[in-house]
Length: 47
Length: 241
Length: 218
Image 1 (cartoon, rainbow over the protein chains, first blue to last red):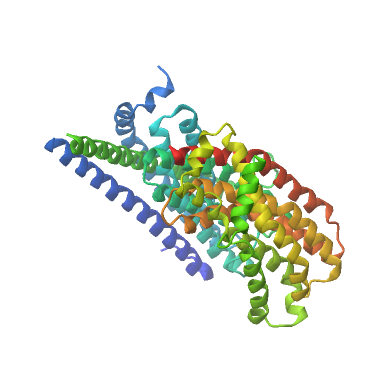
Image 2: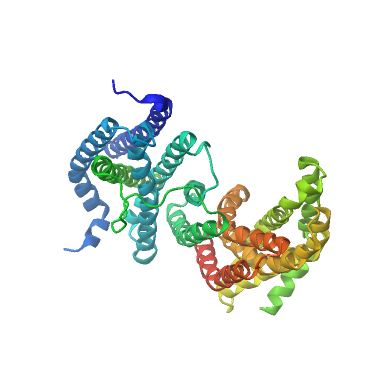
């Protein structure tokens, strides 16, 4: 483990928050895309 | 062969589907290596380990501005040439830009706390980012408020044009209002004082990674929007039949 | 155009038109601030310029949705759009009517409220000039926001979300001008910026607002 010195909290906090935000954005994007694809396929198979 | 062919949704779906695996892979490789490399860089003698935050802060801030510019260009293309994909790409980009702005602000606040002794300072750069965030929120809110998709695209396009002018105006007004603590550009080409190479190369890598990440996310979100639009069209056709 | 202006003014002054509400809101805001920060001159004086401008901003915002909403409901907006008068001109006239009914009373009342907030007499000319130059931009930008949100349900909240960020430059230069007037500084640079912003919005915003109106009337 790399030594972060006295600013460990700040650095880890910044990385943690940012990666959580990015992860949330990516997750939301993928879920919305999967739903749109599924709905569209269902509709196309029906009609 | 002209660039406008990509305005055809079918063509766009095919091309973006083929390109996506590459951009996703590139984004993942560049971002992860850049961040890990950045994390392993030695401590700065003045800033200690907080210097590592730069690898998130600068790319996010850069993308926050670039995404707004991209939305402006896409809105112009929609307003002038009426290509639907362009309007949808602008819609798809806005939430990514808002998240990038928030990341820029949060990492800035966390960095500012030990360095400047305060979480928030009404410094011109921070303030203009806050204003940029307000513009992103207004833009997204307008998209979700208007029901007819073409009207929504038109209205948000006009708002993006007016908003760009005023975001720029606010940026310079803010300089007039308060001089700041924030250091100037860290990566300018001419200036003699630059970051040392130890920090510069991983930073370039994360910037590239964030750019590719935006590209991938934007493509996926645009594909989502195209599918939704097609689904709505199919449902409307079914209702009529 | 003159007829449209007179009609709008008459509608606003008529009972239930909301004329004077803006000033009343402004008065209440200025009366409430001392309860929030304490009655001391030392506490009020530094923030007086900001409070006055924020009050003007919010009072202006209150009446914005009336610019187009009523005409949209009763269909006269469609008539305006098909009349020989260009829609850009109609937008400009309606923004002017809004300014006369809300901006102008605010300017008249502002010195009085400045005294309430212990604004020094030396700053009163700067206050008047800044409001005189700044409030037309507020009305014009507000007309743009109203045009964008005219057909929407729950448009009011969205309207403030869209319009308030556009007010930031005006607010900055307006308060800066009063502050400089207060300290005996040079009021010319903020005055010129303020005038520039107002002139720019007067020139450009009617086109943007008319474009938004055409979309909403489609």
